[in-house]
Length: 304
Image 1 (cartoon, rainbow, N blue to C red):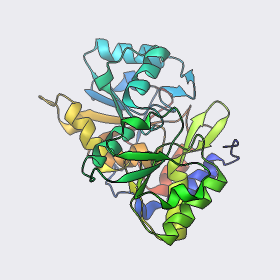
Image 2: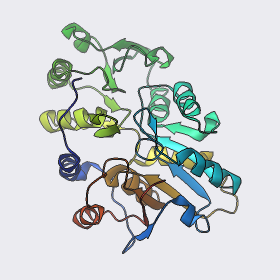
Image 3: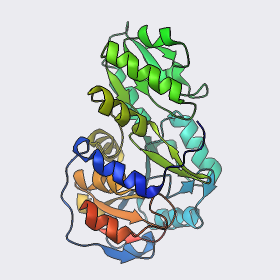
Image 4: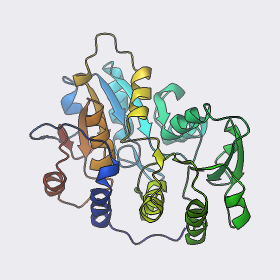
């Protein structure tokens, strides 16, 4: 799609508009300000890290992030990347972070796409999904029959349900075709990335959640979301953690967005860390947004 002109302030307001579709949570009364994650190693044993805005911005690694993760690992901390990125499969995502220089094992990278695909295993084999993705999204790994959604209107009527994984090649025309198809014939509508935007070098790019919520507003059809801030992906992450001797109060979700990372982490009963200097809230008054939204992180860090 063409580079959007949406601003962080507009996206904050949009998240507030769709708040009723997001989970509820309890929050601390106030946040503690810290410089980086190194300041809370005495309080946290497990770090669940968002990717965009915490580890990287687009294809650029956030300065010091590689070294910070190495330091946490040297101290025996458990580290997992918990990403809403659904364009790539788990192996592609893992290779991406290895290329960036992060010393991670594949089991440490947990994506919303993995959770969405797991849900497909409960769907009858004869089901055909219309998939919003890219031609490099490896949709052939899906357990059901698939059809990549493009500009053919007949494709939207020929499938049994829709799975939205990536908006990288999405267009206004395809958005209209999907909206009209659901209006004519309501069907299951699954979304593998609930994010409204992602921070990249050129600014914010619109993500599947942005388009899915627009369709929900117009059609009244509620999508099923997989990924932060929804519970299933946190449950999946916690199953990967060695919880021996670890209380949930010593597990932290680290992210750059209030309405996905912080809200989702708090709803899962975890501590939360908001990173402000690289992602969605860069250049904004985070304290004002926290007060307005009521979404309060345990810690606010300038950087990872």
